[in-house]
Length: 287
Ligand code: SAM
Image 1 (spheres, rainbow, N blue to C red):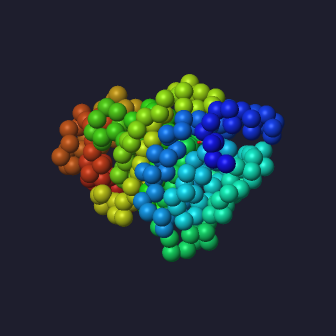
Image 2 (image 1 turned 90 degrees about the vertical axis):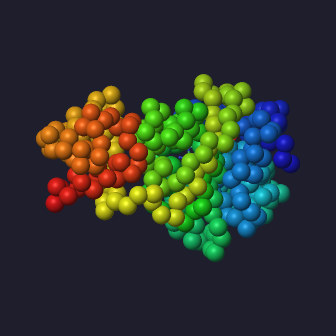
């Protein structure tokens, strides 16, 4: 019962269950048979793993995860998919479907309840409209997970995996790299989905760090600084940061110099340790 990447099977299920794809829920289902096995293989390190999947669709990735992991909990917002999943996942006793918005789920409690003593990974073909909030909430809450292997829009993948200090990076790059070590695994063309989206996709893997790569006394302040710096990425840092912190540009220039940086530096030129050094110096003056 797992030819779910067959386009004829997907159409047949749509017809039989009267299911129509919702654009606003990012419903583009994978119909390329090689992609889900690759995501599952790269996302699950060994058979003892518990896996959280976000967005089941018809279960095409879910079954590949269930073949390789001890247990899979898949969170799916669309209740219209539940009767379909009852049929498509019927052969697997290690899958639990949770019908909820992933952004409303208490993931710490779910992990404690569903995966006691197990290493946990997240795997998903993410609905693009929630990519950033989902990744940030998984990372910021410091959940006991080992890795996150997800398909995202190609441009987002390139930004998330960019080197800090290069033009491709942004505030989200810094946040993701503070909590994890990201890697771009492979690209997936738009023709691999039904219906095909307007963009290509990539699969990335984030290996969660046990410790942050640089010490800061106040993470919230660090991220406020980074967000502020990238809010006007073409301007030299004293301009946006003076607005963000409500402090004179001269003070920001002096802090940059004290951190060993040029006062004419732009956000995209700084490494994570540079941001951390700047945050430590500017935080001193915040009381
Ligand atoms: N895993 C399937 C596949 O690869 O074919 C479906 C992937 S599709 C890109 C995204 C799925 O996420 C859809 O089934 C959609 O209903 C579900 N979804 C969208 N928003 C969600 C949310 N906030 N919480 C949980 N699931 C969501």
